[in-house]
Structures are given as structure tokens and as C-alpha cells.
Length: 449
Image (tube, rainbow, N blue to C red):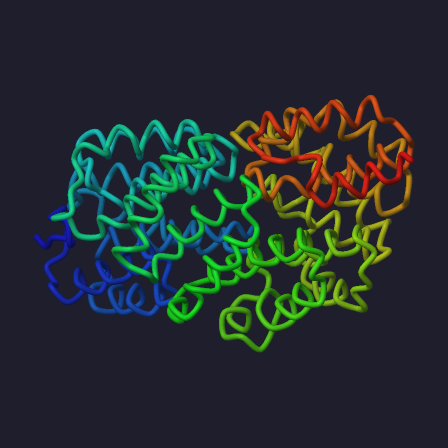
């Protein structure tokens, strides 16, 4: 019996296989790109290491790609062959993976909670729970989980800073900006390469409209992101949000081309269509075009990747971005085909995601398609009734705001100042500061004059 870095048992006779898996999990927790090589090494060293097969399935599930389902199923099957040798903790992880694979995301999270009751220092379970809850919009639930395990943590526990950064993001999305800032800064002080702590602080700053601070914060830490996974590219996306507020569009284009969608970067060479990268690209191009900034043929690169994902309903936040990409590329037939596929999924799915597609993802996709056709009445018809339900698609307040901005622009175009005032109040309620002074709302107000 082997142990991970926080003393949890791992069922393998091979110390080398366990050490390789522990490294893979450590890198995952620290948002480093080098997860698959040590995971592969672990499985090659001990093919009967059930927990390694489980971790492989969980990593693939986290990629939210329908084309990975056969590999996830194979990982589950391999793990099930070794269940009698697993610890109860490892068996709970297998049950969580199977629940997630079957679409029962809430059930999967409940199993992570069960693990954490017994093993409050199991940071892997905490991170996986946060990841699942983030993509269904349940960040207060995630905050409850991190609060429950917090008393067990101290500086003496390995990866303490990562626990702090996870907790910081929970607090930020729950509206506790001061608590989030304290923990995020502490996490980054422990480890300047902690991109999740950096990310939590960037969120605090965009929500509080601290634009110059946000640019300085990210600029001061960017040299520490060399080993990071796609979260590094997402941090560049955050930097674009700050530059947009200042109207620094050339800086945004430069960052987009060199970081957000630079297909020469190793991260994008290895997986160009990872969902978060697709979200980054689509939402930033949309924001630029709403500011009347020409983006050239940049939609085309995203389009070619999207055409392979029209039946992929693994993420209610990503699907509306696919609809946006299709519509922005003039592929309205495909965009309506995607919408019909989303509606069919929502009508038949018996898991966690179907209701979220129905309540949030479908209205967002419908609004995005209508916006690209300048059908502003249809934008309002889709998004205004759903605006207080969009959290159910998952993502952060800052990410979902692109759909609110489409609604804001549509209301401005239609001269509906009364409804626009309601949306401004909504944004304040969501936690945005200085809403009328923000670029999108200033532009919409100008349309009313």
C-alpha cells in the first residue's frame, strides 16, 4: 500500500507507479500542463492500478468532449476489474466518475463531499467538486464544501496554497470579495505560479472595476505561468477584459493573436478545441465586434473546430459559444441545427445538465444567433426572461456577462431604456461595481440618445 503527498492510501504494489500518479495529481492540482505523461507512466508501470485508471477517466471527463466518452468508458471498465483491491476512498472516486459519466453531476459532487467528510485534506476531491459545480453554476455549494474542510488545513499540509486559492475563488463567485482577495493574495505569496489564486484575484478586480490594478496584477505574474495549462491562456483573456474597459483594442487583438488563440503555442497544438479555449476565443471576438473593432477572419479558425462539436452537450456554458461561433461565421443553418440538437438533449436528458440547457444554455444560444442577425426583438425575447437563470449554464459572472452585453446592446438598439435600467440593476445584484460607467453600458446608453 502506497500513499499520496497528504497521506492518503493508494492501492498499488509499485512505489514507482504510485509516485507517478501522485505527481500527475499534484500537477493537476497546481494547474500544470504536465498531467498526462506521469499518469501514462503510472499505468504503464502498474496496469492493474485501479485508482490510476479512475484518475485517467476523471481527467478525460474534465475535458468535456463527447469524443472522449469511449476512453472514459474504457477507464471505468479497467478500474472495475480491480475494485476488490481498492480502498473505500478509491471506490468512492470510481462511483463519482461513473455518476459523472452518466450525467449525474450532482450525484458525483455528493460523492466527493462524502470523501471529504472522511478525508478533509483530500484536495483532489475538493478540486474536482469545485470544477463540476463551477460548470453548473453552483458556486455557493462549492463555497460550502471548501468552508467545511478549511479547519483541517494548515501551512504544514502540502499544497496548502492551492486549498487557499480554491477557497478564494469560491468566495469571489459568492460575492465575498474581501475574503477572496485575502486568500488569493496569500496563495500567490506562497507560490507566484499559482494561476488559480492569480485567477481569483483577477476576478475580484474585474468585478470591482479595478482596471489598472488588474492589468498590473497580471503583468507582474505572467512570467510565472510557463508550466501552466490552459489556465494561463485564460489569464490572458482576463487581461483583455481590463484592456477592453480602457478601450485599448490594439492590445486586445495583440493578446488574442499571441496568446488566446495562437495555434503555434504547445497548449493549443496539443488540443486546439479544449472547451475553455473555445469559450475564450468566441467571447473575446464577440466583445470586440460589439465595440465595432474589425476582427478579420479570426472566426474561421474557431468555426472549423466547432463543426466537429455540434452534437456535444457536455457543457451548457460551451454550447452557446458554439452557437455564437456558427452565427458569427454566417453558418446559420448549422447554428439552428445545433439549437435543435440542444433542445432535443434538454427534452430527453435525465441527468443534471438537461434542465440547465433548457433554462439557460438554449436561451443564451438563441439570443446569440438572433444578435448576429441583428434581430434585436428576438434577442430580447430570448434573453430578457432568462437573464436571472443564466447562472445555471455555469461559468463565472465575468464570463456569462457576454450574453448580458448582447441583451444590453439589443435594448439600446430598440430604445428600451426602461428594460435596460432593469438589466443594469441585475448587473449590480450580480456583484459588478460601477455598472453605468462600464464600456458596454456606456455604449448602450449612447444608443438611447
